Image (tube, rainbow, N blue to C red):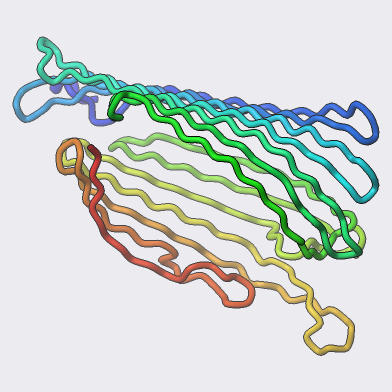
Length: 309
């Protein structure tokens, strides 16, 4: 903060995140898995407009997600599973003018989604599986931006498919993940993460195909409110990944190691008032990708305009 100015150069941020999961095995054939996670984030700041008005602004985001997954093993080759899912997202934005009310604004959005489903998995032979089921979904949206203030959509779907797969009889995956984020001066936020994974196919006594042991991620974002500018850069380094293939046709699989690769994405945007934003962005700027071992979209540059009404 600059003591000579009423406004702040950035935003004060308070946030927390929580998560939990558990499993209850009622019998050898019936189990219940439960997962829950959520977060809360509050940002506050003060803006000084060119007109001389001083604005206190605050935004609050809350998210909750709960999932129940009962599974019943009807036989050695048949499994019936159910899904019950609920998510809730609430956003509140307050724009409060000091000493006046002409620019005051409060925006509130509440989105709720409920989904239930059932799925039957029937193994057919050594490498096929029949999957059939049904899913129902309802989403409710309440927002000041909607005509009438509320919206709703529902969907019911039925599905069936014959799936072919290459089964891994036994596998072991273990690892560690660490992360660090820091807000720096000049409205700069830096986030770093590293994951080490040891994955092994126990039935073949070899590394799990396609799984990298090392993965590093980084992201930096910057915002300068007086000019309406925002910029972000994110990248990742993924270590070498093992694959196994019979390239010579002699019935013996050789090890092929896909090389380490780097991904970089970036975006720069300029706000024009409250509703219009210009942006230019690039994906996969490092040009990572391989038609056989890493089939991902190639380098792309694009620009556009986004508008909010």
